[in-house]
Length: 336
Image 1: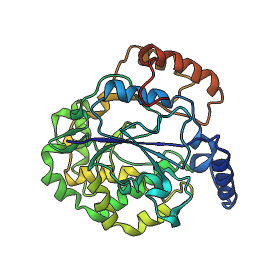
Image 2: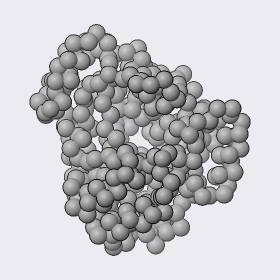
Image 3: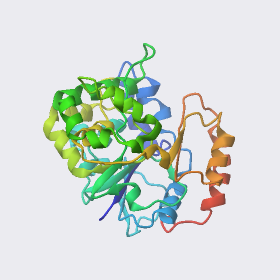
Image 4: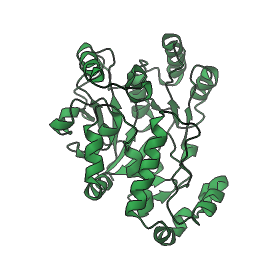
């Protein structure tokens, strides 16, 4: 079984990219930091450790599709046989471009030429720091995932578009799935003891008439390429509209819609997926804990999130590099 990795990246220091991005941002009267501010595009200079982790801990990967506006790191070995450089214009319609909307990019990933049916989607801040097997992502030719239901709500009235996207996603799912019908159909996958301390949530939420929402682990996501085509066939209008948005908007949906579609369809193998990695949300406040997590390789994946409150990136990046070098010091064959 072939399994590809897809990772998206942007060089926020590229002059052409910044000029184009600022031009289109200037055409909008209300671009929030959460939607299109510089936070969305900052590079911490850690990408080489992403490739080193992949080569050392997942050497079985079939191909890596490196998705970019057009620029690539100077140190990247463009001739590596496992590397496919994918520019936005090579898989997205001309009418969608240029785009600075990660949601638009994500929902079109299935159009990448040569992409395997089974693939894992990464953000560039998802680092592999310990060994993983193919069956951490796919079993019986199905994505491994956890179907833990949740309830989407906005604790405050603000412009946090992530919450809005999740509620839109729930609406799309309810439009296409009879929740109780699919609960009965996939009961063994939803009411499964593998979810351990989270099972009580499913015991509660599966009694609801409508789909309430899902807990989305902020970790690499396993997908069937065909799932994207199914969602596009069912909901072309909303996906086309999202693809046209240059920056994130409150009405967008993202790859979580495809994940939820897989789970509601029962096209997944139940696992307690969150145990595979951990996502740190306040890097500046948790830097010592993050360094320890990396050096001790406590789980196989670490996610190091950026935040609008962080303004000392250079110092934090230096500390993170020191920790990564303790487990991934040797250059990978993806580096010149």
